[in-house]
Image: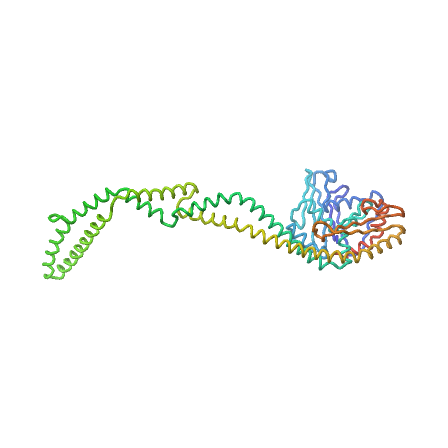
Length: 453
């Protein structure tokens, strides 16, 4: 309910504060006293579009605040959906600037005029000729019938299933679109993956191939240097090994003359052994290396393939190519797996659709049971208000689509007098009859809305 209304710099109002207590409040006054201005200010804070002419002082901004107690209005979901802080005591504020721009706030959070308007329509009903709109609102009509049918628990179950259905449908559409997009790339990605799988990719392979290529490409130089080294070591007269052999003999003779000579002899013996081993290694390397043009060509081809792949994929090294290969493998696998995922989602959607259909049937049956009694109550209320020939016809047919309130289409038809054809309530009721129907029978609808909230 509206607890407090503050209006500053609006029309004839400089500053006004009105507090409303629980119960029935009446504001009266002669024509021109400002009753409509009060309602005009209230309508602005409820989302009506503002005009610069509504400012009392065009150099100052207009500020209108309305304080509501909404604990019983079941609006927590609305606040959550619009990313607003929910408070049982909620303040709506509207500011109209001298420039003509306006700003809207809910609990000090900036909101669009649309959000403010939708929230305002849930907080206050304005009843006057041509403005009693909620009775003709289809959602409100469903709420009345569902309240009488005690459909609240079934509606909650239906809403949960519908949310799951919508999410699954969205996921399915996303998968189908993704499949359509990725199927175009599947052949190309498969080609790239096969190309990488055929290449000799493993950590360190490029360094090994480059080293082997360097050796095979310089066989003559390597053999020349190995041969030179072997001659320097193994020459019979001036070779290093021959000279070391003579040094070893001399140190061996000295070793018996003291520890220091013995230690020196051990070192020389070690050097001789190491040099002898080096000589064997030189012989082995010289004998094991030979020119191999075919192998050189093969290694050169492998290296060129690696270089080309790195350039093609913009990869800095083999590690980067391996990462690209893994990513391509995942893409190809995921695309191939999309078909099974789509099929699973389709099956899930069929299951949810059956659950929705069954729950919608339960809602429809409960609604059909209470519609005749609601029709009698409405016609009885109108008869007691001087409209004995007024009649209602409430028609409900299955809808083709699942809506938030079920799978039904609801139409309230109304005839005010005998011989008058039925028509939609909001279209055929005259201003006077609509006012009688909606305002004078207000007790029925106010009690019903209180029950709904």
